[in-house]
Length: 320
Ligand code: BTN
Image 1 (cartoon, rainbow, N blue to C red):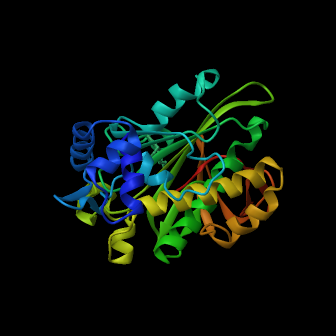
Image 2: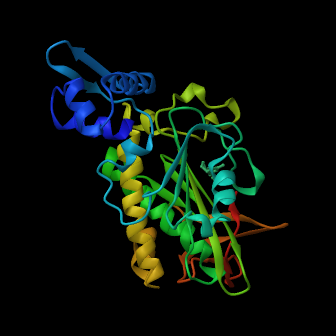
């Protein structure tokens, strides 16, 4: 109902309570109650005795109606579950993904203003205060489980492009899942899946972007290596626009992946890579390997040239 009222309010400068009541088939008192609800949500609405209600400004909150307004995707973000606070959007998305039969469709989005137990890779904590973007997308690709690393890579490409479109900032991808600005982490991706032997059951792509967060807000132990878009650009960034742009870019890349035409996205990944051409030290399980990151192959594996010249393929690991 509040969504319908907003639609009418954005069409005209002023809309009377009477017109709203008529259009929505409710009483004027019910309209007034809905207007109060919108005000409580952070919408600034003034009222004039003769002219009616006027929408003055919208809150910078990630409400579904805000994200879906002007979102041009076919299915990513068409269904949105919004929470002012959650433990972790990935945990919630994984629970929902089990209910595909009950209408939790491909592209369903879980989004929150803050996470109380955000999850990073390797069981790490992910600091997720108000002001960031913390979201997870549920996917059911008919692909083999070996595609999982490619899904992380396309997510990174979509994030870099969205950041550039919305802030003009050029960011870089540190294999496999970090987005950096000036060598500092601005965004992380956590891809989780459930699969049979040869086919994916569901995938949850979680992405966290440090958007409007002050440097001093970050815990001391990560301050040195962390940055927010606000810090990098010197101004607040419109989070709704950034979410919309990311979802649009993500859908484009994901469609390409589903057509098994990964090479075009891979080309872009290489263009934005922070890792290729660098000498790196990698943690893979219990082992540490050193060498030059020379390429990413068609399966999304990193090709490392060891000091003795041997080439090895690495599907998953962490750069030290
Ligand atoms: C990493 O770099 O270690 C991955 C961080 C992923 C964080 C995002 S925030 C939204 C989603 N929900 C989570 O609990 N984690 C991911």
